Image (cartoon, rainbow, N blue to C red; front, side, top):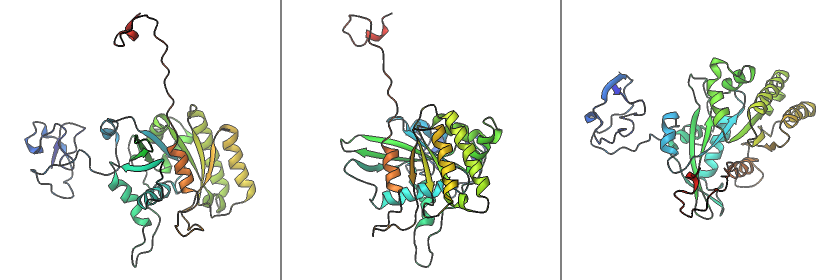
Length: 317
């Protein structure tokens, strides 16, 4: 099936980039490269939304950032550390209403299908016990999958967030060589993130290769410290129900806090909590901290003029 010539158009999965109800009538349709046929045929006369609901890519950022630039929350860590499980657990807690309060309520998402793809395996279905989400593959690409969510505060103002879902292999290669060809996606995360969550896998730090896991995490922490540029950082211990040697835990903590003394520290687990609501351990506390982060404000210099017309005050030399 032919595609559209415009790189920002993904018809027929989404609406036509130029606004044609029937995308086949668009003058640029059918002039692009051959693409795989869509999973389901779409009625040409139906009205499609300008997004598919899957995880967002770079081409979608302009659309999502229209109402306001969303904050990018980077989940950084080695492979199989629990990054995807953390995102899926947050989504399930939000869906159950456990992550909402008077100060913050869920206000929608442009990537609900993407969230569902992560969280579906964590749900308990009759005859099918929950399992952890599949490993995020180290696919080629310039940016991670971006999961969108918007939250409305007590005054009614909505704020958008983009949560990164990137394979751990990217970050491991990036920690060894900042300019590695296979680390382009990790570099994108490091440049555009507003909040950085460094994931420490307690299960890996307690296993047979705990020495290698500790060294890899310390190396990643050094790279992150060199690239953070003053942005908020949290050290997140995943699989908090797993016990590790005190000296290894201290070595990892010291390596992170010596490089980033202002880093916050959280321990999370999807294991059943002591209460009856089954909120996991530490998941809501980490989400609360993440959503309270605000981007630094820009302070403009006072205008050097006596003109009272606001249209010309900042244009006077």
